[in-house]
Length: 437
Image 1 (cartoon, rainbow, N blue to C red):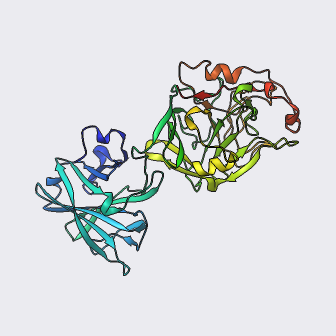
Image 2: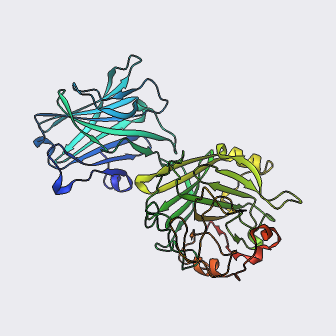
Image 3: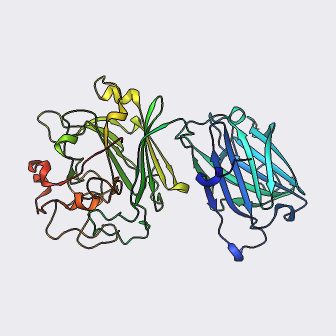
């Protein structure tokens, strides 16, 4: 059903097992993808579907845009499967030999599943695909997330396997081709080491590549500005952040005109050059995201312009992506009525570790010590408190300065954090901004 190459950018869940899989482990990989008109679902089995049974039912249980009545159990069999969430909709594909039939079910107020419309499905050896038009399912907005779990059943007799086996999956809706990319930075892989020597904490929650930014995109649609971060490693949320950002802190600094602040938010220990002063700082993290402006006259701390409600933050663990959306209307208000001229602005995106118990004067980013510890990065210079806590900067390989050069170009000082307000922007590493080419 999906066109050639359509699944290359799709998300998926891989079921473990391999040659050790038992006969009840039929599914190997669950896929989901989108285009401007449809949601696509796909399930790959470990053997051809015609060999699984005389009649096999594959139920894709979903939450639906707009919600509605829900049911936490599967539709089929005496021993209904507990889904782990309340499903609003079911896309069910029946396989009989080499023939398929697909139906969309919705949940009624009494909790029953009622079929509403036939869908297009395709069978090819060990792959089942089904196309779900938004006009029947409901069109999600970019950045929305919904739950997904697939249950394989023997006819209408019993459920055999649920995928993902560990619980419901979470699907993040991409931009659906309706946004325009203004800047795309292909960041070098393997440079999640700050100025060059930083190492990860020792705890297992900090997976390899988790902070290794590989792509940063600035885009816009009619109503929003969109900032998308893609990482080489996993977007880990073992600590249960409400928006999925359990270990990451991401800042985006925007230079909209002349003037602006030079020091980054407290604790980043970096600045921008005088010609790149920022007017807007987006601080994305798991619990206290917000939007900030330069310090008010006579103040040293950045001014809070809005809380987390001004940003829509979505995480896509299947594709190692974090996306931030900010309404243009909100940006205009923050800029005192100035229009959003996103293509002419300049941007700086930086990656740090999130810290729930930060050092004094540091806004919730993780320390970098000389030696890595369980929850501390390593590689900092000796006798320094002014080194940066930034792990990766969104710079292309051919940028005017490398990340390592920029972050390492400062004179270490052992200053008390209480005296940081007295330090000038030039006491810290200088990070030029990136503009549209």
